[in-house]
Image 1 (cartoon, rainbow, N blue to C red):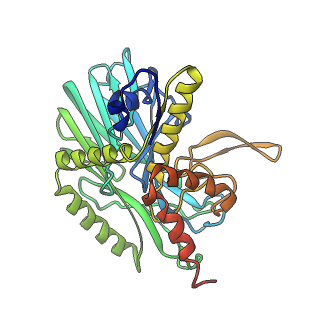
Image 2 (spheres, rainbow, N blue to C red):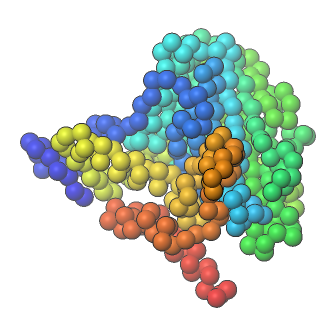
Image 3 (cartoon, one colour):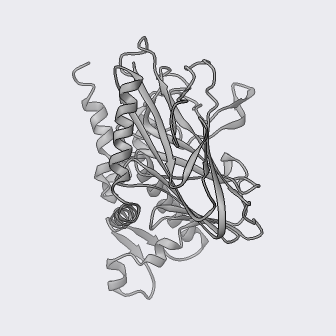
Length: 366
């Protein structure tokens, strides 16, 4: 571990002070309003792009390191699982607004008037949590939004209509797809305390409350049928749901504490020193958010790509969805290596394993 200070004791250098890490937090005072102004967060395999619209709605894309589509070498190779919108009624006031990326605890806090959202992806379990607290009782609406409604490049998503007080959807690759991704199914289940079904894509509070908790359980598997995927998903949700919110949140924060204490670099001095330190810390953070899944980090935006209304390529401009990534789904080592050389120095060996596993997995084929 390295630290460059003036006037700070050796004891302070041996353990990174919380306030040094907190100085690298990212804080915004105005809402999004689009995914272009989203914050990334994740648990190494599941990622979110989080932003707030000007009406106060909390939005996020859900991604996963193994959500490979049948277009596995094309520009729609690594898909988002979907998009979630969380709305409150009455709408919170945005006269005072903050959105803070809390690095030390691995969470995003959104303050809208007297309402607070806490968004985190469990570092130890495949679950996304959205916790809302407010001074006065409010009703919550949770909606899943998909743009893959017809077969265009990849097959459309399937939304299950027979779920009670849950939202369940998935994308299933055809059996005719490349053997490496054939019959791969990925999607998620959404449920929450006191949330009841409005329709197949919307949950609503049964009654207003000052506390609300939403849990989202993503899953990717290769199964003989979509029904087998659903069985595994329900089992996963039941198992994690039985662990308890407070227990899992505490263990999640412990994981991030241990991560930040592996190694650290804080440079003090002029504005260049401050920006360099924050850049190093944020890059290490986003690597941890997308670097512990079944596949290595993609050099083209990891799992945090977003929609773009004016992508310019080859002299032309077009709108693309959050599924799109230039240069497609392939791994090019000359680009991929940039994320991995620093892991040796930082001691982040667990994040190197997906890269080694990918190459080891090619030995038999080669």
